Length: 225
Image 1 (cartoon, rainbow, N blue to C red):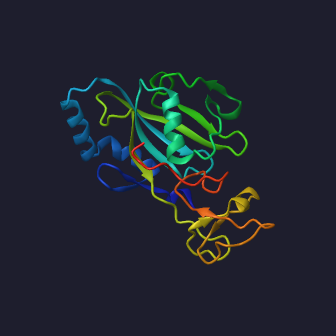
Image 2: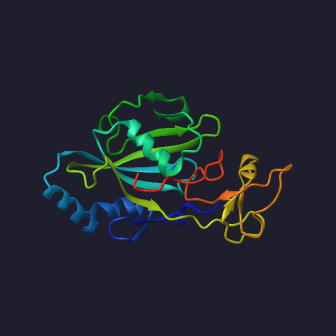
Image 3: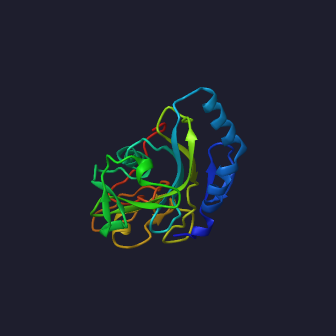
């Protein structure tokens, strides 16, 4: 379903496009982001540790986000962000852990800044039946004022992937949950979007999320989150 090397994203501050690895380096020196940070400092907001985090889907790494998170926020707040941006479908359970499925679970009440530091990774699992796994990695940390009223600010996100139809390789616009459940690609173009599985013929919009086509996921909440 595509090549990780071609997963690129847009910087929220300057609008420039970079690869996942390049984006983390870019944000460190982005002039437009620096101006936003300095403006926030000028408003004399409460100074807190602010962590630059990268969240990526564990299976392919093609879906990713760069976030700035107030270190005093809880993992429950980070869980809520991940849910509204690319996970929530049916109110499934979720957990954070060190080491994935078999690792040590981290309570949702823990503070982000206590759990994550630059260079460390934790795992987030949503839905223990048809799971979507996200790896959250600490990139950098600064002390200062939030740039937004909310504890989590989106700094960059991958652009929607150009995925081919599983039948003809034309650009896909829909995804078939039943095909995905059967281990197929599931992505379909407008021409081939209607097909049947023992009387089931519903497809859903192909959205920018690692959960597209899983358990009826229909897309993110409307921002701001």
